Image 1: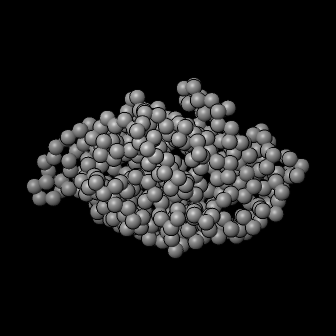
Image 2: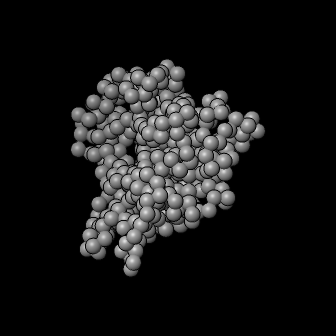
Image 3: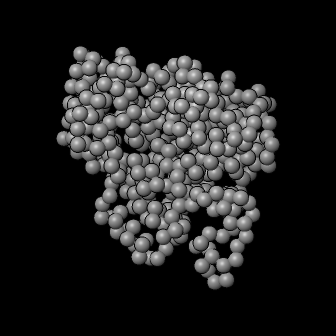
Length: 405
C-alpha cells in the first residue's frame, strides 16, 4: 500500500516530545509559548495564539468579533465543513459562494452580490495551499457602497469599521501571495496543524493576527488567551509562579489551548519547514505535473502563478469529462491496486446537515463540476520518486479501464 498522507515521525520529533514529557510540563507551557514566538517570526504577523485546532482558531476569532445570531458570514461552497461549522456555532448564517473553475478558491467576482447589511465577515479558504486573491477581496470591502451597508453592533466591530476578512488558512502555512506570507494576507488567519497537514502537531492550530494598528496586539493576545481558556485570567504556566495561584474568570470562555506535547512536534516541524519539507513537497508536485500533463484526460492543478505560490499541500487532479460515478469507479480501481487517494472536497450543499438547511447544490454549479472529476493524489515527505511513478501508472491504468481513454 502507498498511504495517502502519513505524518513524518522521525528521531528529531521523538526526542523533542520526550523532552516535553521529561520536563514534567505537558500542558500549555514554555514550548507552546516558544512555538507562538517562532510562528510570529515566521509569518511576520502581529500576534499568534496557539490552539488545539484550526477550527478553534476560527471560532475564537468570530467570538471575539461578536458574530452571532442575525449575522451573515460569506464562505465558499467548496471547503471542508469546519469552515461552515465554525459559523453555525456562533448562531450566524453561512452564506455560500461558488468557486473558480481554475483553482477551487472562492470566486471573488461573486462576493459583492452576496454582501448585505448583515454581513460581518468573509472567510476565504486557501484550498490545497494556493492563496485566494486577497487584494481583490480587500478592494470589495473598501468600496463606499459596501462600507455604507456595514452595521456594527459590538465595540470590536465598531473599531474595525468594516467587514472583517478572516482567512481559513488550514492548508496554506508557508504559501505566498504577491510576496507576502500566508497569515499576513487577512485581518486574521486560522492555521491547522492536524496530522495530515504539511506542518503537524498531531492535532492543533493557531490564530494569526494581522489587524490594523488601532488594535493593540499585546492586549489582543492577552484577551484571546483568556477567551481560549474558560475566561480565566491565568493559565497553568502563569499560576506556578510564586504567589500566582489566584486567578479570576472574566467571561464564559472556551477550552481551546494547545499543549506543550503538541507544540514540541511543531517546533521541529517549523524549524525545517521551508528548507526541507516544502522542498520535497515541491519536487513531488513537479514530478506529478510532468508525468500527468501528457495525458489528454488529465487536468493538472495550478500551484503557482505570477502572484501566488502554494505550499504544495494537496495535489488536486481532475479527470476531464468525467461524471461523479465514473470518478468513484476510478478511485475504486486505484484503491484495488494499493494506492490511497482522496477527494477534496464534497461541496457543503451535498452534506446532509447543510442540504437540510436549504442549501442547494444546483446553485453552485462550478463547485459541483470541480468535485465530480477530482482525485487527490498522495503527497508526503517520505513518498519516494519510485512511488510517484507507481501512483501515476496506477491512476492512468484506472482511468483507461473506466473511461477507455
